[in-house]
Structures are given as C-alpha cells and as structure tokens.
Length: 231
Image 1 (cartoon, rainbow, N blue to C red):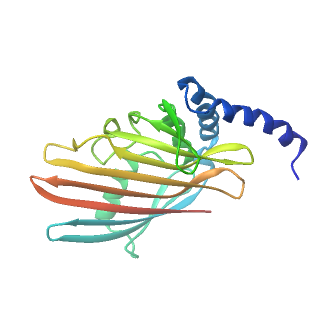
Image 2: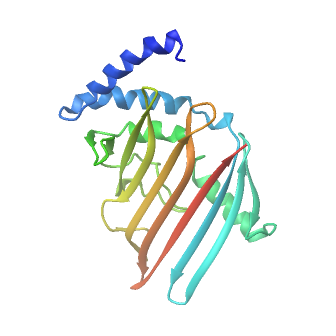
Image 3: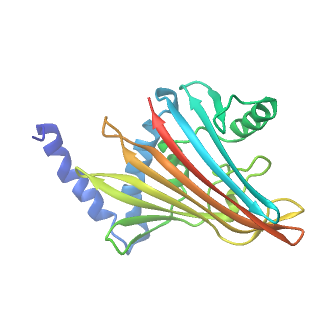
C-alpha cells in the first residue's frame, strides 16, 4: 500500500514527466534535473562491490582473454585476482594505472553526463531517451587519453512507481579518431545497464564495451564484459 506521502508525490511526478514530452527543447529539463539530483545522491563512498571484467583482445596472431576481479570497499580499490590467480607485479602496475586514470563507476556518474543532455525523444518501446551530443570532458578515459569529445550518448529512461531513472546508457563514437600517433579507432561502443537495488535505488549492474581500430594499418580490437556484485 502506498503511503500518504507517496500518494501526494505521484501527481507532481506525473506532471514532471508530461512536461518532459518531446517537441520543445526546454521540456527535457525537469526530467533531466530529477535524474541528476538522484545521481548526485548516489555516493560511491556509501557502497561496496566487486567488479569482474572479462577482456578479450583479438588481432593478427593475438587472441587473449583476461579475467580480472577487483573490489571497491567505499574508500579504495583492491586487486583480488587475475585469471583466477593472485596478481603479479605487472598486474598491480596495470591496475594502479587504470584505477588512477578512471573515477569509481556507478550511477553517480550520470549526474555529470546528463548535464550535457540537450534533446529528448521516444524510442520504439515508448520509453523516453535523453540524448547527449558530445560527452563532457573526463567522461571516458583510456590509460593515456581522454576520448570523451569523440563520443555521444543516449540514456534510456524507465519509470518505477512514478519515479524516473536511467536503465541503460549507450555511448558511441561520433567519428573515427586517433588514440595516439599510431592507433586509429574505427569503432567504439559502451553500454551500461542499471538495476534497482534492494533499497529501490538504481545502481550499475553491468557494462560492455567494443573497440576496433588499426595500428599502422593492422586491424584489431577488444571486447570487455563487466559484472558488478554488491556486498
């Protein structure tokens, strides 16, 4: 049974969502701001999780699969294992470099991303989609570069008990781009899936990534599948 407070809240949220209908650029703002407010409240210091990443690299003479398990305890990262074994010195070096270059993942990161959303549409399933023409600086980094300016994004919105939240974020390359002087990226996609936790708040459940390119004319690519388990 809904509480009196919830009953009072539903009409206001319904009006917010109607105001976010496509057709007028200003109407996306109430929906966008409601989601940004919730994302800002999702502090990564208040959660703990394990991140399991399966990375597959392919290219001429290359077919490598690496499974890495890391843990975030609300304050710091710990490298748990690599391919089911205790990490070695080179594993720790790669781990430290990657975690230093990238912020802690989670629903909270949508606050900065959706601040750049400038359009809204309805997809084939009738869901609202917020569109980000260019990702803000710092949104997506490699170990050596910030590639955000080459990417765009779309956030698919779900409504639960009258409350909007992002169920999926899809990021794509807007163009082919150079990662450095030698590597040209010809395809780049990332998909983030969010689910409601036991407390009813959305959190990052999984993500996948696909990148393809060539190094001095030799093609190759990598896929990544990441699963989050909360404790």
